Image (cartoon, rainbow, N blue to C red; front, side, top):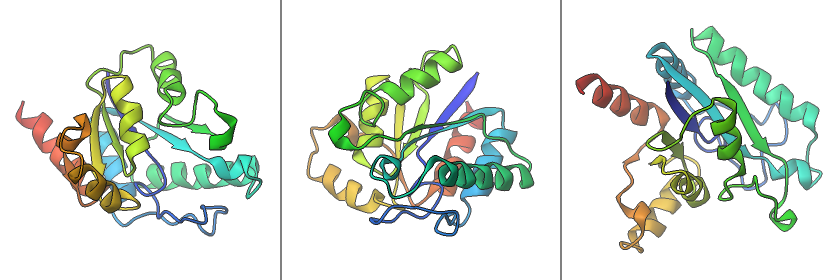
Length: 187
């Protein structure tokens, strides 16, 4: 199975320091939906792993989150693709749960759900916590500059000894997917 794991806010849709709290605020980044469909059509099992602490903070409820995810699935289907799963953590950092990235819980759930080892699986994110979660499972972290990605890239540039300093960086999900599909096609 060719599996790929995507973060949501800042990778697939616009991010906000005030949280994405409603379907109206959930706005796809140009090219991201098409990129997911391209992955799906290339044989990838595409899953999303996302921290959604706005639920734990009382900023929105599960129904609103489900509405956002239903819209994401609908848009991907319209482009001829498919999302195989959306895994989310509703907890705040204070909850000290095992599922909030960079903790390994979401990725453990993905590995269990798909009965697979995550070693080498591409994980595309815009934050340090996304990439750190991937390292715990020996995923291949990929950084995008959208969302918090440009700030994350700057942080990593100041830590050249970090394992993540050599992670590939792309302008957005579409560019990362184009590179991934060209690279795997060549091999």
